[in-house]
Length: 209
Image (cartoon, rainbow, N blue to C red):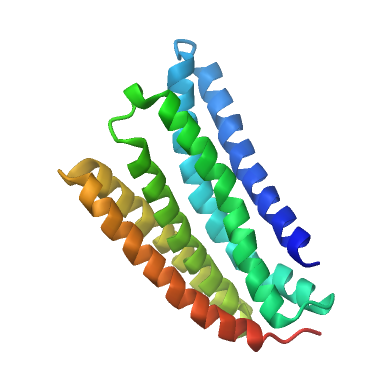
């Protein structure tokens, strides 16, 4: 229930995200008979980023409801559980980033933006959304089920909306996306660090039956 458990869960997350992106890309290719392989790959990268953000938010809600209590109840210390959570998130992100890098490099001529900008924005959106999802999950024991459900839905939708809006702003509106992307990434890393500190306190106070 220690390192391998968190790595395995992270890989399951990546598999679900990548599988969803591949499935929808396949459907896109079937429905659009004129689509060429390059267009399918480009749409696949878009689906990968979109599903990565959405699934990351939802899965990090369930972390505080299932995975953390389960790991602690099976003998992990709370410190080990918190560290394992970081391993889980990193393991979930790496395969997505690697595939995005390969796909954008292969189809660089079809992307208007440099691959490193796309990857940096993907990481920034991922960090922001897992913080939002983690916050919603942490509050599951503090609020009533009705209030928590309402709060979670609103928080998740707003979080995904903000992440998507910032990405579109950097890619479509700004004239210097190479400058803004590092600002956005720096801000999200800082926010995630703040949330990780708060989350460590949440894990230390975790009640397990």
